[in-house]
Length: 212
Image 1: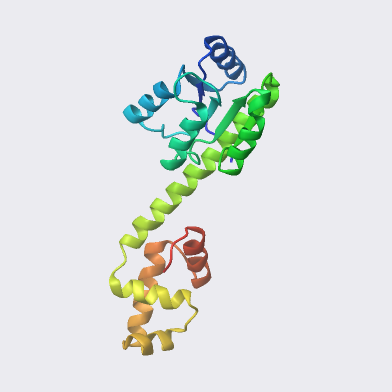
Image 2: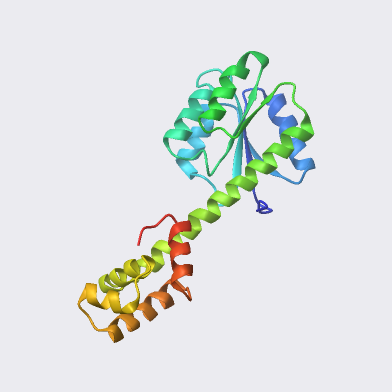
């Protein structure tokens, strides 16, 4: 999945020259950016405005005065934001072992200074694509939950047994209702969940991470 045209790359670095150079580099590849000079300033921005609705990623310097990039990353992980906003660390040579460890703990990647401009922007675009996939999956889960919220308790009962692969006669026996009633509930479940078969329904629930 490609990121949308309004995807944004956040830059957090205490060096104004680095921030300006990165912003220029991103503009040259038609990418929007927003810069902060400290981890504290970026957190304040997050607290005030939250994550944007469009795909985003974060280019984050490891070493900064005050809160370090690593400390900021820990906050983002604790808030569950590092998947919607993948983090690419900008590191010096001495920071590489630490950066590798952060990748194991959920960071998207790290780029060692001095980094290749094209390689860095390529990784940023890949991070934005991952953000776009994450946001799409979130929307899908939200839509699925909304559809499931329209089901009655009896329709949920029928759906659970349909997904288990039971035929209408056995569903009727288990729920102590008529086969015709099962057929009606089954049709309503398929309609509300926008599926045409039990297999499609089972796949929908599995892909959405939702139990029947």
